[in-house]
Image (tube, rainbow, N blue to C red):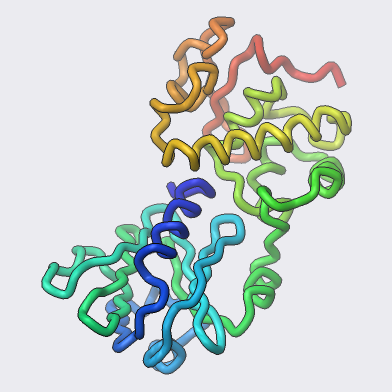
Length: 263
């Protein structure tokens, strides 16, 4: 499932492959993935224009044109790829943007949990989705304030995109492991220092994953993501990894490195 690092890699790819090209056509193959926009409106909003910037907020992508933004959420299996005019469309192509010269930008999605839309401002979409600030940009003090107001398990709070946007299941587990915090610890009972450390580790983990293009084998040997499986060995050699469900999400942790809080 694409999380912030995967989405950021797609954003950088779009900067290289989609900007500055005149849009000649828009074809909606499956209108069920459209979000807040009709096929006609999407075509009218894009044809004749050029994408001028590729932005990201959490896991949400924005491609800017004159008058608004094409929006894309990758969901579980979505992707945006550039293909040449003579190349066949991917089997699960849902929306195709054609550029002058024949190159095409394709939104493909096997399971159709993703979405494509168009908005006049990014702030309107962020407000409608009630997304918190991007986790890589939020001030540490604000991160602490947003997290500690919740009494739920810290793993659930980290995954709540209304608190901060961008943290997914895998990277939440990694950040909690690096911080020595049990995934079931109550967020409101963590100290400011513990949450500050967690904020720094979330950012470090996400940035490192982007740096290695989400190739977990290239992550440091001290990272859980290299072998995130129940019964696997703790990267620090302290114990076998355990699996539990937190908020319905599979959670991997080390019972020795991440002991439950006495509180």
